[in-house]
Amino acid sequence: MSRLFDKYKKEVIPALQKEFSIKNKMAVPRLEKIVLNVGAGDAIQNIKFLDTAKKELSLITGQWAATGRAKKSISTFKLRKGHAIACYVTLRGKRMYEFFDRLVNIVLPRVRDFRGVSPRSFDGRGNYTLGMKDQLVFPEIDYTKVERQRGMNITIVTSAESDKAATALLEKLGMPFGEA
Image (cartoon, rainbow, N blue to C red; front, side, top):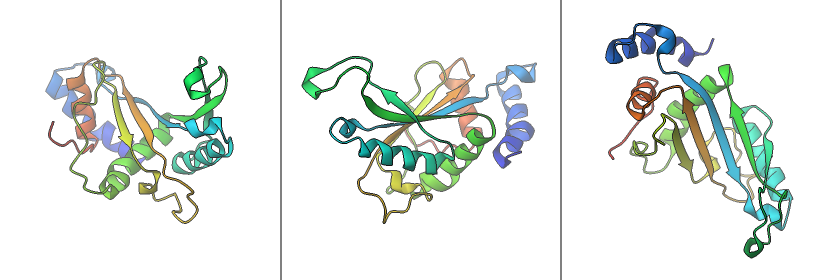
């Protein structure tokens, strides 16, 4: 059992039950999945860019990355339907809690000029999306082997029905929110 999941069961569930007056502990908001997405639009010209992005994403998450394909053709970008243009990983269960723990305690403090994540990045249904500009803040990446800087989106999907409940859940799990 991961350290963060143990904290969720012992501390976060009772605190959220008390805060939102929830009687059944199965109704308490929880993390459902974390999705990491790296858009590699350069893969249209050179497919090797996508291969290196997949390797780096696999190093970060400990799970092999899947390939995202274009849904429709866009002539101005020289993009055809079905071309590989992104890679993504969906984390659930133990790997999800391990990744969230590393994200909050190791990765986010390594970001330059970090003053907390924005509390306005919720989608209205209790899901939070965080954008990273650089993959080098992850300790798994060897900066001497990186050929170019790549950003990524990290989406944290919760079972919370409102942004307020999701904010409380993520705060109790250690997410460092800044000012709005």
